Amino acid sequence: MTGCEWMGRLTYEDDLLAEVEDWKFRVEVPFHNHARSYGPLGYTHHRKRNAETQAEIERRWSQNDTSRKILGDLVARGFTITLQDVKNEVGKLRRAQMGGFSHIEALLHFLKEFVDDDT
Figure 1 (tube, rainbow, N blue to C red):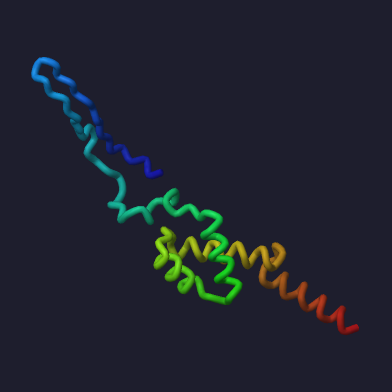
Figure 2 (figure 1 turned 60 degrees about the vertical axis):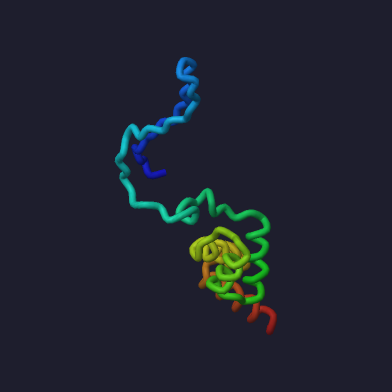
């Protein structure tokens, strides 16, 4: 992901003469090329949206809840998700609702159907 070169090695040492069995950890390359991570929200693989999360976002969006309100409720229920993740899902739902059209194209399509229905 970041190309960080930090490296550590964990080894199991079994000294039969001293009758010692122990794990040893040694840092081999102590340098990082990125800032510190602040928990699992910093990694996308911890924020994958499962079917339950997506269904909940879709249900709340259909009730006209804001992305921030959806996020607050999901986080309160223990989901690991960010505001940007919720906004991305809401954006997908909007695009699907508009049939793949842009905002302007969807408006023109709606107006064309509206005018055709009146005549």
